[in-house]
Amino acid sequence: MAGHSDSSSSEKKSSEAMNDVLVFSAENMQNNTKVIYYSRTFMSIIGGVIAGILGFTGFMGFVFYFLVMAITSIGLIAKAKFSVHSYFDSWNRIILDGFMGGLMSFVLFWTFAYDIVHIF
Amino acid sequence: MAEDLVLDTAIRDWVLIPLSVVMVLIGILRYFVSKLMRSSQVPDPKIVKEGQVIVRARNLRAAANFIPPKSFLSRRVYFSNEENGLLFVPKGQTQNAQAQMFSDPNMAMDMMKKNLSMIIPQTLTFAWVNFFFSGFVAAKIPFPLTQRFRSMLQNGIDLSTVDVSYVSSRSWYFLNLFGLRGLFSLILGEENATDDTQRMMQMSGFGFDPSKSLGAEKDGLDIVQHEWALPKFEHRAEAVLKKLIR
Image 1 (cartoon, chains in turn orange, red):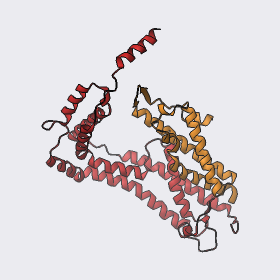
Image 2 (image 1 turned 180 degrees about the horizontal axis):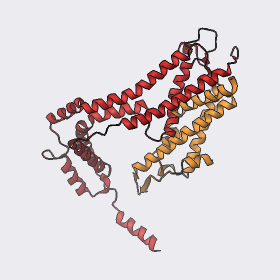
Image 3 (image 1 turned 45 degrees about the vertical axis):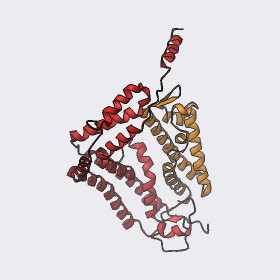
Image 4 (image 1 turned 30 degrees about the vertical axis):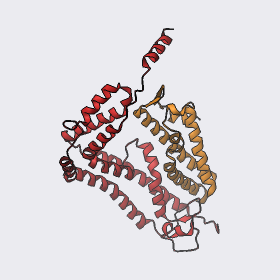
């Protein structure tokens, strides 16, 4: 988990719940979203290289991608000390954001590593 | 899979890696060039004023519940007053501002420059790839695709019995094009010129900004219902201070 905490070390509290009104600090929220995006991209690249080296093909590779994304989500949630609502505005952000963008990078590095190791 | 082709190591050395390296370098080059070529626009004071008024109105709308009802109402009247309210723009004027924005030569030039700096490297690289690296199998993608992709991915290879997973270098180029976006965002920081869709949305947003959004802001402000969210703040302050003293 050291890798996760390094890249998301600058998450900031973005909301204070006063009675029933939630106030969001837009700048902090943007920073948190950026952190999530960077973490996901990084993890999908690493995951792609790992999948290629291990020789996953077809369906197994995509299952591995989902696994890597799930681990990233869990890492981010753990870093936010399980109180997601004080750092983000909704669950969807921390779980689903950056999913598709990471997929393309994953496929690229997966193809690259797979070819280098297995075909050539 | 029918057979397992064994590909020459030279392909890996001289096709895959150089192509990726070239694309990364071109991306970095484009980033720096666009940074250098960014002409500083002298902002029109009228437009800046309108923009600031919009920001103020937006803040008022967002934080409406934290100020007492009377002050919110007085602020709202200041903005949407029929005669001299800041957000009220008569119909004739709105058309003008829009037309001016579009015929402004500076804006058009900037948009052209940015679009061009995006399209030209892509076109050149694509032509280069097609010229040098066509006619052989370049890579194998690790997942199977249907037969319909064959014509798209295997354009230089004329054998129809080869598995669709074995692709030509053109598809390696496209794979790189999409996949390196993530890498660029990591190494170049926030601002990178490789995300076309984002920039196009930005560009089209600017043209309409001042004139239409004034009316939109006014409507939004009129809709807001004020709910005094801090009715008990005196009690809460007392509780917090008491805790501190203890």
